[in-house]
Length: 213
Image 1 (cartoon, rainbow, N blue to C red):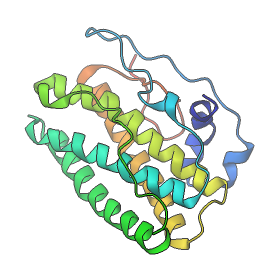
Image 2: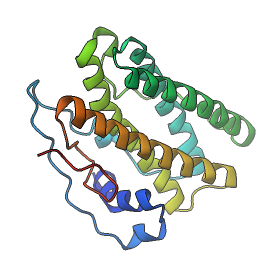
Image 3: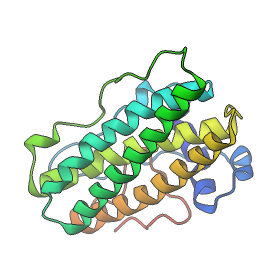
């Protein structure tokens, strides 16, 4: 749970791009989820199982199945009636498929003797059985924490100096920043379409859209 709480300590730094700010920041309280007419919201799916990133290999071998999980879920957005969601899904599929290829190439090049990445279970619900608003809302509610896991893993790698290759440092920085931008977009969609301004594990930080009253 320390890993989850630590998210609040560096989110503002992610927005501003300042890695040095992170170490000096405190950990603001994590907001409670906003009530929803459809019932309780997911509370940080998968976050409780997170463990610290311990090496470059650990980062890459865990990020590959994490990306593949996101790709599988994002493909379901082809059925969304909202063009914004279809575009978001295609962006996730295209970007993360290319990133999986890069990570697998690095693992083959540098860590051939280590175990290959393997699926570690999904944090996403059964999206194929959903459609319409239910599909869009459920995807957003679960993909935000899913992205947060990638953001936190990337930030840990960078903060702890675990990367052994400049390519991986640059990659982790891009994953962190790109997925944070997508978190902001998805949070805006939740507020705009479903009146849900707050999400578990997502503190109010500079640059974040204000929660609706």
